[in-house]
Image (cartoon, rainbow, N blue to C red; front, side):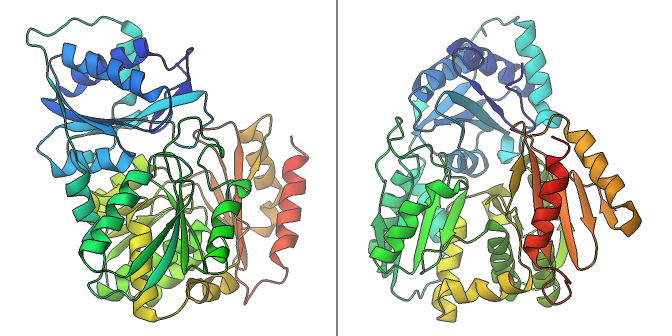
Length: 454
């Protein structure tokens, strides 16, 4: 079953992800974890309701009670799993994958991630065996509105005094709209002077403007234009299940997720020095510089939410971030959230009385990065080995935490195979004060080397 990925389940509808599969998944989850009650939610995809119905049927037949959260983002399921007295959660979603896909994200009690090394492999084996029997006592399903408690938790991240701000929000017709509406009402009730300009707001499983995925450059224009049109202080866009958010400054410029990691690390360490911050290996220098400056402790983890969450828990880190726009918070069950980051940035904009472009400008100038460049190659392992051989004489410091990182002191890059797509991903950064060549030089150099192996 190729739909079982490193840390979730994603596959094509009708062939891999079917109601029959979802029903079996419910039985397998119950057999492995033996939960009493779990939460189930679904994104806005047209196939999600039927898959959710089949999943709940499987759980109920296995004797598991279900709290049906209805339309919900992944982090609402996470919140339910750690905030309520239940034993786990499952979200029906394929996040930013094409419309013909769907999948599931699973967590155990306390919102502990279930990845290939922590349960998914066993669930796959149970489904392949296909031997399920109904429990003696049928589980019950109850509709449950998690939104009020979840919204109250989000509001706890806002500082009491916020200056007037205008913010463009763009769920891309995905699942985030109802949370934006709830926060807007909470702002009004608390007399917080934040004005929201909502675009592409209504949920629509046909995705008339394309699958919500602001990682794609072509999906950023609407948010950028709205920021400029409304002279907003900030733009926020989300992916389909809104566990990731993407920010635009007051000039409509997209902020690379790498620099947001640094900004949020600074936000936490200014208030709580000597705390642990978890980062991943793809781009690191700006993050390490900020952590050192504010007397924090840097902890490196393999990228991917299952790995990041495990390290977050082991180290009791206050915050962890990935350049892919996944941000993890100790006070959010060590889970990732696409809502908390922009609320924390609102705090910074208000406290520092400076625009977002100024807050990130120094980072971008000191440690320019390429952003993630994707390549389709025949043999990812061969390409990585070729790069290792090519640079052997330069004696770079190598790190194999995730893929392979090459550190040349003045510039570095990370090359890794994607966990979810048949791609090789490249990230390059330079130390502007020390580098002898501009960033573009290294982009062209590595692109040429990789293309020669394709």
